[in-house]
Length: 93
Image (cartoon, rainbow, N blue to C red):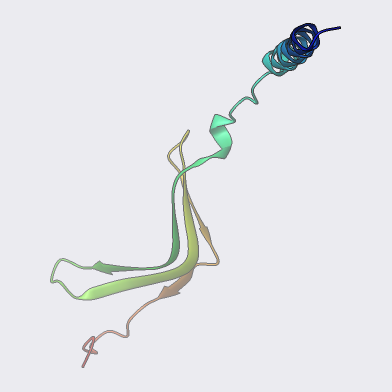
C-alpha cells in the first residue's frame, strides 16, 4: 500500500467523521426564548425622590432592586423602603 492510498483513506475517514458530526449538530433544536420571564430593565441599589408642586421633597424610595416586566409593563420592587419627610423641615438643611 502506497502512502497516497493511506492518505486517501485517512482523508475519507476524516471527511466521514466531520460530516457525521455536522449532521448531529444540525439536528439539535435551539432553546426557545421565554419572552415573559425576561425583564425590560433592572435597577439595582436605587433611590427615587419625588417632589410636590412647590418643588419640596414629598416621598423618597430606596430599594435593592426594581424590575420592569416586558409583557404587562408592571414594576416589581424588592424590599422597598419609603421615607416620608417631616412637614416643615428643610431638606438638606
